[in-house]
Length: 195
Image (cartoon, rainbow, N blue to C red; front, side):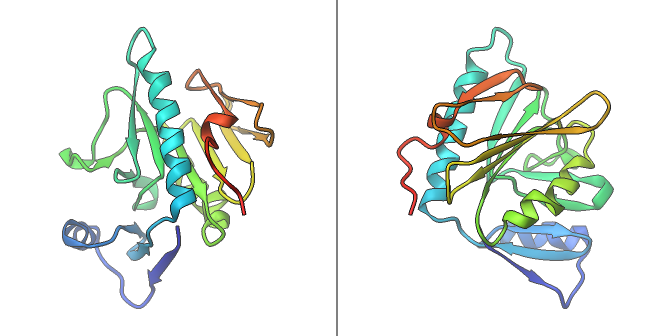
């Protein structure tokens, strides 16, 4: 997905929330600035659908339903940075916690996944990751390339350090140690053709 930021005006959080209620497109909010999120292309959407399908299967076969999965229409509140963002997919530990009782903004992400595009991959890998790390509940970050077979998983350790694992082969099993799941690389890239 591509993004465009309105750098001329600063908005309050309340102004952003009112605007977002009636907006035709999604917007993220950071430190008074609003960024428009452009629609995603076919490959991005297909990868998101594959990932969500795979995660949903893992969640549903648990003896206890400990987690809940959301798609890219759910916002996440990042209080230390006064930001609101839209991840491509996210999982929360039950029960879901919401910002000021709103049912469209979560405050307790556990796993967040982003499908990388050329225009946003640096932001997703660095700045957005730093934003997500400001949330205590956040434990796992999955970055999925749509340009090549490449998935990177960052997992939070007990000492608050993050360990990076990279996967490049369709036969690989992607371990998500904090959530306790494994997903197949070929599930995420099912029926995906790379240019």
